[in-house]
Image (cartoon, rainbow, N blue to C red; front, side, top):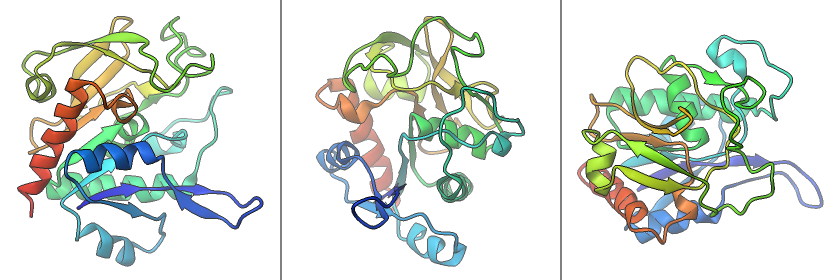
Length: 237
């Protein structure tokens, strides 16, 4: 049973809802998992009641994390922030790390894990001069378009799990990890130096990637990633 935090869908023609891209559910189901969608709750007792039933958790992609969560003021190119989502996901991330719950972070999810454990972010890669490569989908690219390579540390758990050290990935982010949290280590970077993968050597399974593997789940290395996560979660039961 894998927790999957949702996002808030504001009211329009329909009342406000919680939801998540179906691609996350599809990838988890294909790996043998039963995804459970977690609403954004400001009641820790009820959030904990859901959390304690989980065998693992995936932190998905989404909007920007509020800069005050990592001790910065916002810059001009900051996108939308969602305070309720930040609160729910950062709380869950800290619980999961403390309890050694198998955890997979995807895009924003990598950033959530880093911030939850004391790291910081680049608020906008291009605006802050980190790279000249367009990592975001501002150019209208398809979500499954392969954009750049990532070099993985051969000794990392991720590289050994997927049996690859050089992979091609999609790219849909304008933020990225800046200062790495003390409990995490860098295990993958793109050729321009942007941090593309993190993991914790102290945990049974805590792996995060900056790309969106759920959108390219027809690739062998992606299937191995989700299957490895599912095996780790199964041992929790």
